[in-house]
Length: 463
View 1 (cartoon, helix red, strand yellow):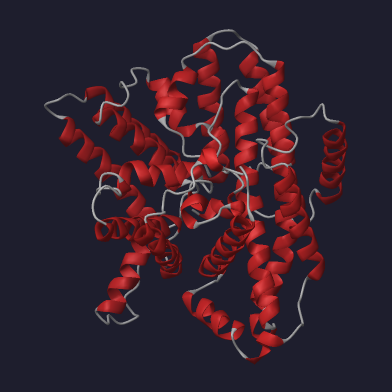
View 2 (cartoon, rainbow, N blue to C red):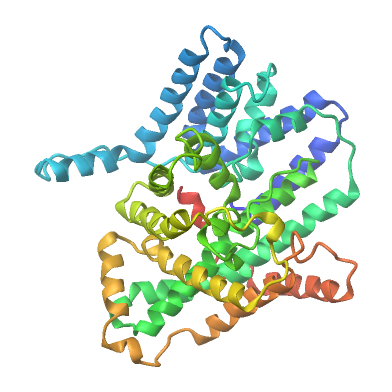
């Protein structure tokens, strides 16, 4: 069930009514648990056992963890979770790499394995719980129903945000009264997320797909424009999902973390990664970068830690060399920040305060790097990626021919609007404002006009 499907909203309405029909906390938690498993079963019921196994293993490991056995139980949790991830997501990648390195004939075939949707998200969410219990950052959860609901909570199950047990488990344990303001904020978030997905992302996808399918016939300017359009497409697609996930959770009185903070207005890559897919970047920071030594050691070690994190991040996104290359590009452009000691220069408290001309220049430079880095992410293969790079810098570089000008206007208009609403959690937040009320009606009309047209799956479902 896609969030942007009619069937999902029927499902959501039924779950909403069942959830608030009782004041029993145990009943409400069970409704969320059962609906989450039903929701995932609509994708492929055969993979429910993977969520169940990850949940059971980590619940028992956390429940039984003590000073004497905590290392053994943490190792068991890591082996099971990462083992399942390796088998279902990386098996064929490892087999193909092994065949290439050792020149094994193509007659040797790997096993065709279907990638379970959302496995990277719920595996990391479940693993973070075990690690936090091991570090004594949280107390073990004693209620299996609450824990299984934490791992499988349907609004963020298949594409995040990757929540922490510290934030989410306690909310399932707290009795709630229906809050009209919170529910309306959730509804507005859902509407805004749908607008970003259906009206912006799905329409831009049409132009991007055309360019990449016929890249050998496209001018340099058209290819560069397609990279810009894809940058806006993937942002609206992914952040649109996150907005909807947060909005849906609010309908049940649950608050999920903000996953995006206008990342394309970042002034360097460090700031970009503090504002893009925040739940994943903070996961890598807390569970990989800091344990490796973080940035407290010398600059060489810090640079190595950054490289390791970005390469792992690339692999997390997909079992393909193009994603590793994407991670390497970000690590490469992160290196000057490490050398200069400015990798933590822009913190959240500095967002949009007293911007100067040089800040806008840094913003444009960072945006160009990010757009260029999206190329291996969008390309069908590493070979296509290299071919497109070669074509961008050929003799057509000075040609003014550009495909999809009307789509560029849509993308630029969206960026401009996001700039003017940058200090709000979402543009519809202050719905009492007359201008925003008019925007609200515009969004609703746009959704009605675009609903069902060129609808596509969310990009991050493949991870």
